[in-house]
Image (cartoon, rainbow, N blue to C red; front, side, top):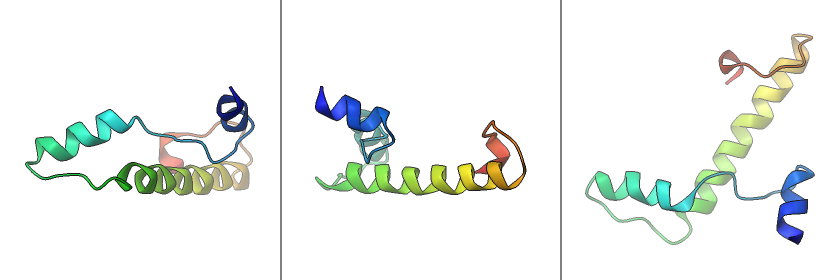
Length: 68
């Protein structure tokens, strides 16, 4: 429950589904390192942070796909 509260407050929670990441990697015929999911989650978090900044810079309150 503590993790859920931390993620809800904008903390560094996991932003991706590990099994789905592994499915994509395995589907390509390769293996996934144990820390791959954390790295993918961090990359997604960075993308979202930039998208939020762009959204705010454009005077909007809604993040749109073009903000990515």
